[in-house]
Length: 141
Image (cartoon, rainbow, N blue to C red; front, side, top):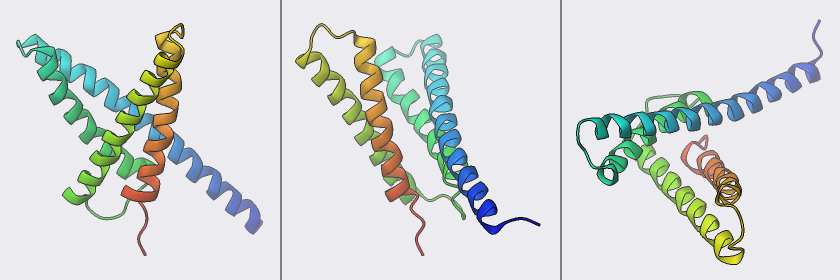
C-alpha cells in the first residue's frame, strides 16, 4: 500500500527532474544543432555571419520542440503563435545574456571572459525558463 504523501512527493520530484532534464536537453541539443548547422553551411561556402543567423534559427526550432514536448509536456499540437512567443523569450534571454556579460566586463575589466559568460548564462537561463514556464508554456485552464 502506498502512502498518498509519498506518491505526491515522487510525482513532484519527477516533474522537477523532467523540467531540469528537459531544459538541459533542449539547450544542449540546440547548441549542437547551432554548431553543426553553422559548420555545414560554412562547408558549402556560406559566410559565418550569415550562416549563424540560419543556424540560430534552426537551433531555436529544435529547442522549442524539445521544451514543449519534454520540459513542459504540452498537450496538443504546436502553433505558430506559440513559436513566436517562444522566439520572443529566446531573444529576450539572449539580450539579457549579452547585457549581463557586457556589464560585468565594463564594471570589472579584469574579469575573465569565461567567468562573465558563466554568470551571464546562468542569469539568462533563469529568465528563459521563467519566460517559458510562466508565458509560453503556461497551462491555460
